[in-house]
Image 1 (cartoon, rainbow, N blue to C red):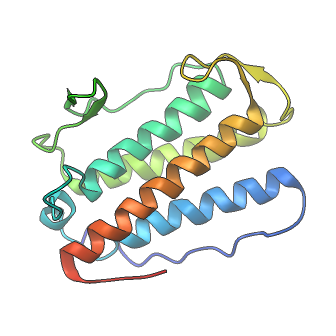
Image 2 (spheres, rainbow, N blue to C red):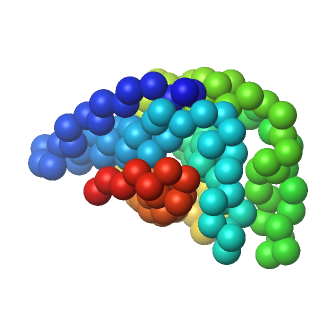
Length: 175
């Protein structure tokens, strides 16, 4: 097993906006890991849905990139250190993680945890002014609130993917 027992934190549903956002981010991070809990390296690499090239490990690689790109590069204005995972360009022109990458799943998991920790460390520094405008090549200039909402949107989308992948791998379901 790569990902051991995951305990999802309680979400704040009211209170200061930034605390609610931080709480919900941690909840979604834990929910994603919960979908990976108890699976082997081989299972995390499986493409169980014929209609999709997605894997749980590919999503984990992607989400470490989401964390670093949005929190470090976009909000903090720094150059994050991305692990050099093997990638390819999809027919739509997007870059995605190549499942032939030999990096062991336990190392991808450790890198993902590190990326989340890095995001938590810079959160207070980069969110002190939620109305601050940040350059955003994907969407045009946006404020910090939009970026935070977009990271939650990324997690919500990919936790949905993870639900389907996990059920197809071993039948496990959850909310």
